[in-house]
Structures are given as structure tokens and as C-alpha cells.
Image 1 (cartoon, rainbow, N blue to C red):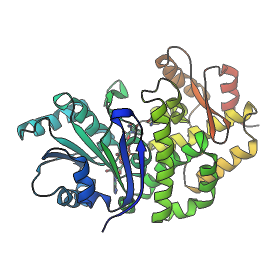
Image 2 (image 1 turned 60 degrees about the horizontal axis):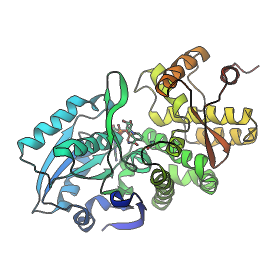
Image 3 (image 1 turned 30 degrees about the horizontal axis):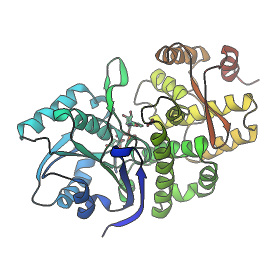
Image 4 (image 1 turned 90 degrees about the vertical axis):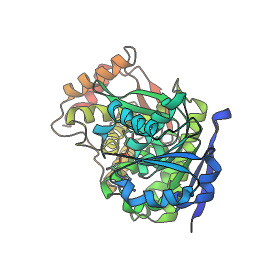
Length: 363
Ligand code: NAD
Ligand code: GLY
């Protein structure tokens, strides 16, 4: 029996949609039916998540529906144009028309690629996100960023394309590897830091319950994270400005991911270390207290997340990798810093000396 615990809305005019959070929602046939307009469905998952959950999603879709299942190989390395093309081959071979709804059941990789497939298939069909990692539940399934990777860059080919609904089934987190859960918690902490101090303080108290995967605590953390994300996305859907605050720690994090080779550090792990660097830089400007940096380190290490870059990464390497990011940003390095806990700011005036001081070995 499913249990709907929270419903919130992403307000984007005619592209608005609900985000449902609760237990066993992926098996809730009424909820599915409300958001599937035609009789045709393409279910996309991968070879790890599919065997765990697809039977139940299929049952919830009912017998009248033409269902095509597309099972992708598991892994970021398959988030490519080739995989996208394989999806289209299978869906076209089954004769799916424009009334088809794509349903993504999986983590951010499955969600991003399925969203992009839905954006492109016959110039755009409906899609529903059923995210099964914490990271996908609090971040990638909400907000409409869809993409595949290119050999020259991550998420370089994609579209802003909003789902019709997001069904977050908290039960799926019970099978998630602990390391993935912790990586998702880094993004949860991010929301507190950038725009919600009361949530951050709540996280400092409630983290043991989240690590123990207590249902009510997880549902609340997801709801508060998604509410914050929905607010930012509603204000700036296409990241012309404020949406960039969602990238706290990400510029440092990308440098770490690139230096280590993708797959060595999980994205959330690199973001955790990046958030500490951003907090340190904010403290060096006198914006937040050193005690807050210390408290952030404690919170993240309690989640078994890294709180410093890899030991073998030099300051110079950081500068070079971040300069590449800088090129992407029209010649100015933009960083998200903290004016206070719960208040992020996007700055483009970070001096070379500030960065050098940040990476200088402590005396
Ligand atoms: P992922 O999709 O690779 O999932 C991580 C691992 O967990 C995979 O092996 C997956 O098969 C497995 N898994 C998923 N759900 C499970 C479950 N319930 N039980 C057991 N195993 C499960 O990784 P992710 O962290 O979810 O997503 C990362 C991707 O998301 C990246 O490609 C990133 O670019 C993208 N992303 C997109 C956005 C956005 O706004 N669209 C935001 C952040 C990240
Ligand atoms: N994950 C960042 C964003 O959705 O903008």
C-alpha cells in the first residue's frame, strides 16, 4: 500500500508539475494514471535498477498500455549519443507515436538520458521521473536539465525539458549502496548552505536518522531539498542568474573529478570537498565565521564525505582546471560563495592571490 507523504509543485506556468514524495509510489497506479495521457509508455531503466523495481512499475501501468522496456547498461560511461540512438531504435521499432510517455526509473544517469530522449522523440513527448538515488530525488529529477555526455565534455548535449511529474519513492533508498546515499546527502547539505539556514541546522541535528535511512526523516529532507530547488528553478529556469547558486562547490568539485578521472570520486564526494573550499574562501573574506567552516567539516565527515581535495592534487592543477571552467564562463571565473549560512552569492571577482592562499599548505 502506497503512502503519499508530501506533494509540492514546480511553478513554471504551463510547464508546471507536481513532485510527489512517499512510500511505494512507484507502484501507485492511480498516481501513474493521473500523469499518463496516452496508452503508450516507454519505461527506461538500467540493468541494476530494472531487476529491482520494474516489475512493480509495469504492474502500476495497467494492462491497457503498450509498454516498451528499454534497459540501459549501468554507468555514466553509457550516458552518450550512442545510447540515445539505441533508445530511439527500440522505441521506433515498436511503433511508438507522439502520445507516448517516457518513464525514467533510475538515478541521474537514467533520468538525464531519458529526459533528453523524451525532448527529442518526435519533437517532444511527455515524460515522468521516478528517481531512485538520493541525488536524483533531491536534484537531477527536478528542474528539467536533461543531457548526454560528449567526449569533449560532460552534459554537453542536452535540453531544458520539464517532466510532467516526479514520483519519489523513498523505499527505493533502502537498496541504495551507502556510498551513493552519502554522495546524495552532500547535495542535501548544499540546499541548507545556499538558501535555507533552518534546514541546515535541522540537518546538523538529524543526520544520524538520515544515515540510518529512517523513512520520515528521509522524506522530510527530500521535501525540504526539493522545495528549495523548485523555488530556485521557478525563479530562473534556464540558469540566466540565480539558478547558478545550485552549483555551490561544483567548480572546485569538477576540477577534482577531472583530475581524478571520472568514476574515482562520486560527484557528491567532489562537491563535498568543493563546498568546504567555498566555505573556506567565504570565511577568508570575513563573510562566515571560521567556526562555521569547522562545523561544516564535522557535518560532512560524519557522512563519510571527503572534506579536502585529494592529497596529490596541487594548487597549480586546481588553477589550471578551474581556468578551463573560466573559459566556458566567457573569461571570468565565477564561484558560488556564502555570505552567511543559508545565503549564497555568485561572485566573479576572486583574485588569483585568494585562490593561492586557499590552496597554500597550512603552516
Ligand atoms: P547514477 O544514476 O549512476 O546511480 C548511481 C548508482 O546507483 C548506479 O550504479 C545505479 O544503477 C545505482 N542505483 C540507482 N538507484 C538504485 C537503487 N534504488 N538501489 C540500488 N542501486 C541503485 O548516479 P546519480 O548519482 O543518481 O546521478 C548522477 C548523474 O546525474 C550524472 O550523470 C550527473 O551529470 C547527473 N546530474 C544531473 C542533474 C540535473 O540537474 N539534471 C543534477 C545533478 C546530477
Ligand atoms: N543541478 C543544478 C541545476 O539543476 O541547476
